[in-house]
Every structure is written in C-alpha cells, then in structure tokens.
Image (tube, rainbow, N blue to C red):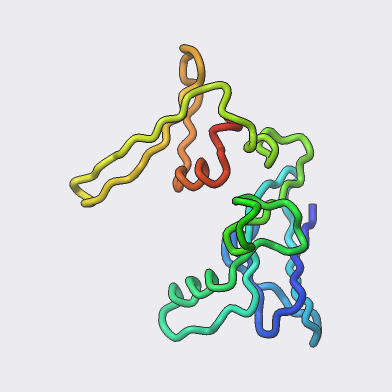
Length: 169
C-alpha cells in the first residue's frame, strides 16, 4: 500500500521520526507552498508509530546533535486522530499511530483493556561491568505451559508504561 504523510504550515523543513524506512526522513515541499509530504510503499498490514517535526532548527555540531534537534519540535500528527500516549497531554508527548490492518490484536482499544491473562512483574537488573542498573519487565502467561516463544522488547519499559503492551499479550 502507499501511504503519504502531510504537514501544512512549516517554513523551512519537516521530518518524520520513525519513518517506514527506519530513519528520520525529511518531507518534501510542494512547490513554494507551505505543504510538505512524503510517500512510502509499505506492507498492507503495517502498524507503526511516528511523530512529525516541523521547522527543525539547524544546529552547529555533529550529525548526532542535528538528529537530536528534531526532538525540539517532534509531535503527534495533527491530521491523524489515532495516537498513543496520554490523550490529555500535549501533542509533544504523544505518538501518532498508523495501523493499516483492521483486524489486529495490538490496537489502541486492546491496550486500554486491563491485564487479564497473565502476570507482569518489574525486576531490577544490575551490571557491575556497565556500572548501571535497568528495570526489566517480565510477562508470564496464566497457567503452566511450555514456552513456545520469547519476545524481547528493547525499551520495553516504554512499551509497557506508554502502550500497555502486556495487556495485549
């Protein structure tokens, strides 16, 4: 399927964070207008989160510094009503959701349901080698059953705290 991301009103540039290409891609300006766009061809069952960043300031420094500057204006897509994050918060603390499949287990509605079929625990994992500690979220299904799969989510705390991902499992 082809999807197109749009922004209207930016003067200098617009970037998409979490693009289907897996990078912070620039949108293209339509002539001399204030309309910006970028299209992608994606699988028909694509589900992804993204933010749009208009008028990203140009900063002196490394390429990494410039990439971080995108975070200054990154926000939920105002043209997309589907978003993740606390709905009452401002547009900068939400991600827009693109979900092309109408029959999907992981949906905004599913994540709003309480955790019914298992147990979620948070453990602290310390590393002497790295000199730090991290919280690790462990989801255990209800009942004794052999493990048929393992899912590891880097930034799993974000997946659970923001998206309630275990509620879908």
